[in-house]
Image (cartoon, rainbow, N blue to C red; front, side, top):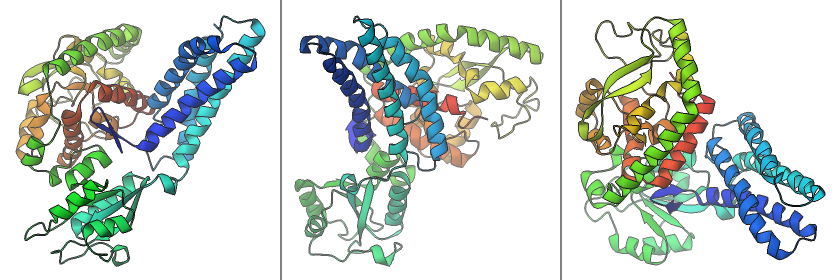
Amino acid sequence: MVRIFSHYLHKQTLLHVLFDLGLILFAVVAVVLSQGESASSVMPFVASHGLSLAGCMFVINSASGLYQHVHNRSITESCARALLGLLFGLPLAYAIFSLLPVNANHRELITLVAMAAVAAVMVHRVYAAHAGAQSRLRTRILIFGSGSVAKTVGETLRAADPHALIVGYLPGPNEEQQEVPQAEIIASRGTLTETAKSLGVDEIVVALSERRGGSMPLRQLLDCKLYGIRVVDIATHFEKTLAQIKISHVNAGWLVFGDGFNQGVVRTAFKRLFDIVFAAAIFLVSLPVMAVTALMIKLESAGPVFYRQERVGLNGAPFQVIKFRSMRTDAEKDGKPRWATVNDDRVTKVGRFIRKVRIDELPQLLNVLRGEMSLVGPRPERQFFVDDLINKIPYFAVRHSVKPGVTGWAQVRYEYGSTVEDSIEKLQYDLYYVKNNSLFLDMLIMLETVAVVLTGKGAR
């Protein structure tokens, strides 16, 4: 894992991005040089046209979800996403390179090569998504522990990180009950440091079920760290592997004394500027879509086009969220708040469609421009649900330390939830965002939101 602006990314993801961008740049440079162009004319060309196309392809691939590590995605779905990317990438390559200030023959050849490079990038994306991780690039991980916690760590790594290679489990000094497979338990080869070095370990995850009575060999763990072996606790393991903070494995001390949760003046000012610029741009671009949506809602059923509801915002302050109405006007005629459910009969036909593609959320751009919301942040909840969840879920109120968002980390990582258990899962993603939020993470979330909209993931 590589940490960029407090967000964890796979090294392999970065290598894939660099390979894809480099492939386009290499193809462009090669074809220009093959036509006898001088080196002095190559660099300005690469900087303008080549980098422009490479950057656009990064956005297209990210928005298509082609850089995500998803283990249950079929090759058919990956091919469909790649074809969707080609629908945008090929015309874009043609548009960029047809403007070249060279003779017609060169322009046609360079444009053709650029489009071929775009197609090659998409083929590589499908291949990389389903090819097994190369053993030499996999991170060798030793799990220090053999109880229930260690078992959970092992299951998480195998399910979420194809680039992790578990070399085995090393039981702690005072662990009596072992819950991991006996065949995967490693016999000690001296000290913990000597065992880790002999196994060629890159990382140690401390997952002891029992930490009292000298179970934690701090000096040996420090020696491992001094030898260049990463040592992480259970909470940090889940943070970087799942991009969430597991509330079952953290305590207030870890949250208080660890890094993150920085809401400085500079960060707040830049985020507000980011919100105003992008919200205004999206609002203007989506005006025709919103106009058609308003007309469809009005034609289908009587009642208001917009739906206003009180939600809990920054520091617990209430505000009126604005959405397109997607339910019948008598959706809560009994006065009792209810979560939306799968195939909810209160949702209208138009409402079902606009929920699926998230058009119903567009009026919230007005909330963003008014400063009540941000483009990215935890989704705002109703006071009724907030009061209930604060009493049932530890640290739930922490999500109110930042402005609620039109989209968020939980929304792109977890489907719609309608139970307390779902709220816990989403909170763990929200805590990760609150702890590690940055403009870099905001941009990633917005790109992944495009993929969610295109696939209709999690809509109800």
